[in-house]
Length: 509
Image (cartoon, rainbow, N blue to C red):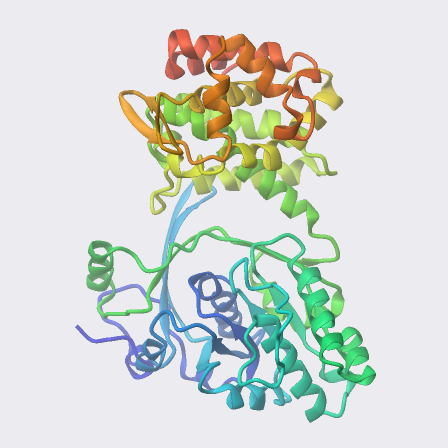
């Protein structure tokens, strides 16, 4: 079986439907410096840049800086920096299956052994954009950072060294500043990175001219990324894809069809990031909080309120639940009837409905196996962050309790009832299967469940340390949770779900 390389890709692939790069794509100038080789970057920004280049829009390639020892950087060299993205998913109810050979990456540089090359590229007149995904712990202040090291230890230190080299190369020219878009999954990632860059510059005693250029000529954008990119498939699936494609690609990655990349920026940012034109999921606007709220409340909130109920009902995966009429209806109604109206942020109803329907498509994706038990990790903290603000706002707005949310909370309380303790670990049981409670409140609930169920509801919901507010003060919420908990204990999760849906006007999905 041949391997993927530039010459092979240009020659064509027999027997497979693959979007191949043209020779002209390899001649485009290098416009992007990217910190990170991970699958999210390759499956989202690099993929989008490739698509834009094919349409003659962005017309630029990516120089990647590899900062860690993990992974196989030589694989990029062996494959001429090409890789295949296999897009699988559901959009508007239709199955999506697409294979694309991406040619957006021009070269991969090692920060440890090729730092001089990185700084040389910093002085390129073609460079316009910096991207990063250095994990959630990448945007941190290293108080002992040395900007003159080869390379500096931290990602912010490396980035500041690049900016300093660029400032010196162009004599502080205002038009040589960069648009910097971190994609690390932390709130206000751009704001935090910008603050660390300034702190490092001050600590290093850099001159006032550079600090002024840093803050006025460069734009560091907050951004929110949302695309499931599982990465390289398991061996059996990879072998099947190799047979389908007609070549072997060790850098091949899987990706869902859906994507969202919301970037906080003005018209200059939109102009520089011209690849944003090629997909409606790439949004550049001054305020991206709406998209953060939609994702947290509708996608993450729905996951968190359904996971315990699904485990108690014997549903293993999200996709499996979407194939169950009752669960699919519960998930839809929970998301669109309870959570959407409760979002504590101004939301256009049509925008929210559209986002919710896209989430439902993602939940149905046959190529993604998302296990409900995995979603119960840090269950209590997720409910506090993702659901409680929505719940409080709903009750304030409608003066009543959202019933699907109440059922989800009741299932959470029952899920958190442990049946066995082993050292500092607590285990629950559902349908004859034991599960580990991976929650820092497991010990609290083990003690709480020594009381009758009604007292459990009252004590848990009134625990302000747990929720940041007294949930028993919400109109009708405690009574609804107590009623559903009793039903779950007496009738089981499946029968309770059916009863609740029939009572609350079950709507087909």
